[in-house]
Image (spheres, rainbow, N blue to C red):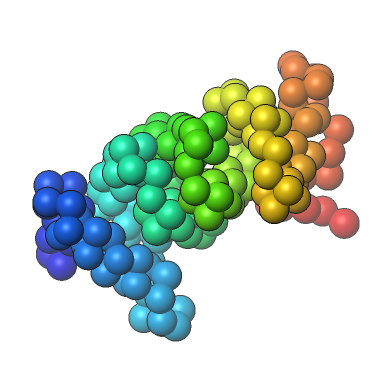
Length: 173
């Protein structure tokens, strides 16, 4: 009930209440130790992804993108489609392409990196490779290069099996 109330304030509250609600939600999801954090699967089940993606698309807020990154990094693989379908990737790519603050762009790149690692085909289909290619900020270039290296095999050889060591379970050595 508490999560639903906070999500309601994020979605429908005035800007000041929305900002405070996002900060509180961030502390529940990312702050503290691992044992006291809200599990990412509960966030997906509670409907947080849809609301957070909507807010991220409207505001390009760094804190909202950080929560989406946390969900993308730790949610089970079968729940990643919810994140992509609700618009987390589009919100991150729009933040990257807009003339937004570099820290917001960095958080958006973090979200794209986690999605590119865990769901490279969907990330490539959404146009992430072309979107990050245009980044010229020196501080953001390492993240840009990481995304491009993850997606390059899918872009250069469409329809062919990727010549990479990335598998469903992660990197195989």
